[in-house]
Image (cartoon, rainbow, N blue to C red):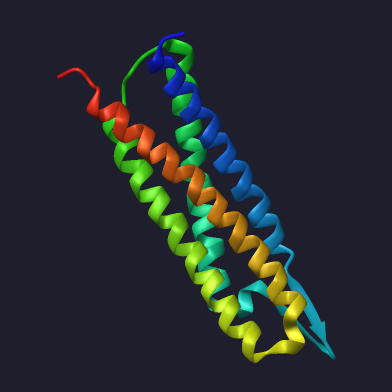
Length: 154
């Protein structure tokens, strides 16, 4: 197997892993709730969690598109779309990082001030950590797409 094919396979696997982390994150964040008395606190009551959910949904949809294109390129053994991958990977990775940072930062601040919702914030923290893992996978794919662009024949 040539190194170029190995890079394509690694990128594909990392894209799938990114999607798995996003899928688990959306499940954890979507089920984050806590009942206090007669009130139910859910993820959409915290603005940064809503932002994280939006980044998960948009990032997941874009990542699915990239998975489909990567699978097509693996099957057909073509090199098309290198620029799309390059810019798309950069945007996706920073987008996922923004969602993870917002959720993690607000969780730390809110947990320090509202200790009776600790289990609620622990779930939000878990979802944000999974989103951060998705970012890390996406960042590695971004490096691989930069490598592919630098080795593209002119």
